[in-house]
Structure formats: C-alpha cells, structure tokens
Picture 1: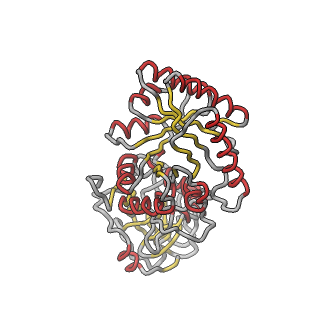
Picture 2: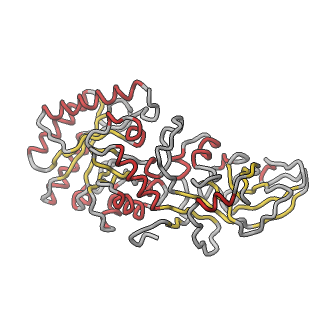
Picture 3: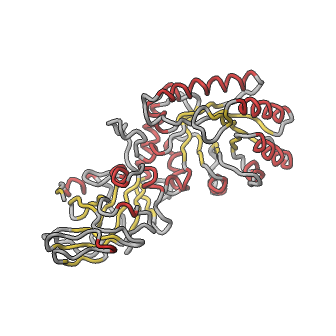
Length: 397
C-alpha cells in the first residue's frame, strides 16, 4: 500500500454528498460534464456537436447528463436504441436527436412522430421508415450509414450504391429526407493507424456518390471521441464525442488528459472492520492469504453492482488516505480489502474505487488492471448503484 496526501485529495475533490446509509454509490459531477463539453466543442468550433448519451449516458444517467450536455453547448444528442430516444423526447428534450440501431418491426412510427432522426444501413430499414412516415403523413429524417472499413454497421461496397439509389427513390416520393451521411472509425484510438486516413477518403467518396445521385445531406459526420481529440481532418459538419465527454480518454496511450475532468466517482462505505491472523485465507477459495496479522475491511459492493469479478486481488481502491487493492475474490455483493496491521479504520469509513481527484484510482487504472477499457468500467455499474448528482444546475441534483 502506498501513502498519499489525503488532505490534498480532500481539498481538491468535490465534497462527498449525504449518502443516507447507502452502501455503494456513484457521484456524477454534472459541472465537470458541462466543462468537458465546452472543452471538446473548442476543438471543433466549426462543427455541430452530438453528445452521445447511449447506454444510460455510459452509466452516468440518461436524463441528467443529456440536460447537462445541452447546457454545455451540445446541439445534438445521440443514442443507440429507440427506447433511449423515446425517453429523451418524452422528458421534454427538443434537441436534434439521432438513434441508430433498429430491427424489423421496430417502432419507426413512434420515432417519426417524436421527430427523431433515424439511421439506415440497408434498403429494408428505409422501407419501414418510409411506411411509418407515410401513415403519419410526415417526412422522416434519415441518416444513411456507410461502412468505410469498420466491418460492422453501414452499407459496404456495392451495397452503398444500392442504398443511395433506394433512398433517392423514396425521397422523391416525400416519405423520407436524407439529412445525414455518416460512418464510424475502426482505429481512431490509434492516431497513426493507416486506416484512419483511408476511412476518411472512402467516406468522402461515398458522400460525393450520394450527392451525384441527387441527395443533399445537411450533416456529414464520422468523428467519435478519439477523432474529435486527435484527428481534426475528420471533424466535418458534426462530431460525436462519447467517452471523452465523461472525462475519460479514448487514447490512453497518448500522455494527455486534453483538459478533461472525470465525471463519475464510485464510492462505498466499510460494512465491517476486523482483525485476522497471518495465514487466514480471505473470502471464496482463499485467493488471498495475508502473511502477517492484519486488519481487513468488508466493502459492500460486488459484481452485481458492476465491480468486475476479475478485479480479484488487483482492483485498486483508496481508503484511509492510502492506496491498496482488493484482497481475494470479488463476490456478488461484497469484497474485502487488507487495511494493514496499523489500520485505524472503522465501519462507515468511505472507500473510493475510482474517481478523478488526486490520489484516487481512475477508471483507466481499473481497466488496465482487469484487461478491458474504461468504457466498460463505467457502463457496467448496476441499477442498484444510486447515482448522486453533484455540481448540478437546473434541478438535476
């Protein structure tokens, strides 16, 4: 365990909110989120800004985050699923909104009625959108997605030509309006990867083909968080930051935090503190065995809350102003930390799993320790972890 200056961390961190006996909670700093949006906007001043709030805003809370992003200057919102888009509209958010994942039989009519932009990667999607729009007597706003090399969503190769031609036919009938063309990078988080430039070139070739066919998109967009930060040539008409908006870098190999502030801090309180003798194994399978008499603390958070089970013996935490790691297995509802023989900790003391203040472990450190990415660390938090909003404006706290 390594000692840090706890008083310095306390001066710098946002004060811990009243937790009313909560065992584990996530503090969401909406002021930090607004500041991150402004920082990212400054990098792409000539572009519109889509705040990506899919997956419950990367685990941070859909509605409070969306509102904070708009306050920070976001001019669009982006989500993956219809339910997320419907929740935003039904809560009164009127910002331009795109959703991009659908299957046959999805509620396209509900989306069109709510003035939600829709993505299409295949002719059948256009047909279902057009049918819904026609029934409503509306014109649906559509973004055509081209696969420029990710090999995931979007129309690839000759399928792009087919998609463009089909969209133009439907547009001429008044049921759809192609307002956007977009794509997604495969390697934007690797600044020197040759596919980044190759995908940009293919994208603008696809845009040219669509325009020659008679389409007139309002926005062309391909820049995710990484491209927004390190590829200005990809900014185009609109950028789509996701993870960077939450203060986590999509390019951890670049030694630069880009002025972003982590938005989420995950904390818990010790439920039990007790002495254990040397040689007494800890938790299931005795995966950790202290070699000296020591004091351990029980943290009431586990994999049901989103703490990775493979953080066993490696997940970093901050307690008593010191850094240590999880001792033994991460269980469904709890894990143990070795506090050391001199510990003065008591039940109720705060344990910080990750955050952004000096001395606190970060989501990236958790990602490195468990062999994943920071995106997963924050989005995997379970529904039983309350989100407490701090630094809020407009009634979000």
